[in-house]
Length: 341
Image 1: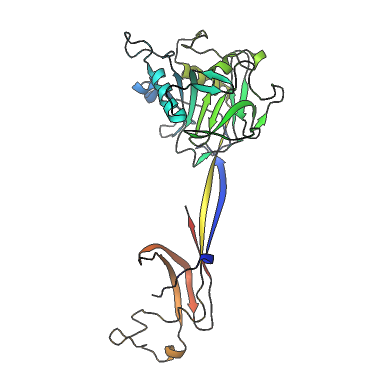
Image 2 (image 1 turned 60 degrees about the vertical axis):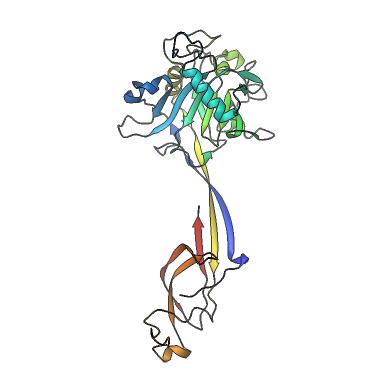
């Protein structure tokens, strides 16, 4: 075994961005939506609804839909004697803490403040590092017709950050392209943006007021239960109504994004280096002499492994060559070690 200290120019760092479809079906568009009877009939049904791409018993969840309301509307109270405390208020507080980090601050969609929202949380196994901005196309149907939503990352003059990382507004459009038939900012008239996309935590927040607006004002006349000032038309949880509106449109496109950072380490055995070995077959264990006289002036070794050590002589990584590399005084080599993380 021989050692050589690496120099600064032996290291090169590279970063590549890789995107892929978000869905477990490896398709660009999620067009089939299923729920689990086990989850829908369990205690969690009051809080959220898991969505699957297939009806298989072994299917993995694609995303979950939930509804939050600071006043507790839209779900049954925990205790009839305690007003405003329900699953929807719990959900609101959880997302408020996760995203805003301030229990006294409501969500602001465009320029409209709201004390309620829908949330689509992508399953953690679905996205690698973040959601790919500009890839979203989500169609939601309503009584006045469907609307397709995307993010405004291509139009935002600056990036807004909060406790959950980057924040972009949802606008009318598809795959990052604004619907030019809407107003200039892609929002609704009087109800703000359609919500937020939070790419760093894999979450989409929908603005119920924008969805419930009339088609003339950019909405779809979306009616959901339990939330003033809108009137419930169905006796079901708001997120169940949203699930039907999304599954009926059968158009949900979204990609994931991941930055792969690679360290390239170049190991350069010079002509005068690594020509002798400490292998017992090479030298005498008792005297340390070379066993074969022809190897004294004309040695030959085979490089098979590169080990990376720190200054404390601790082995950190091992790289195996695809085949042994012949080394003698007449040869120099260049071994490139790649570390992905």
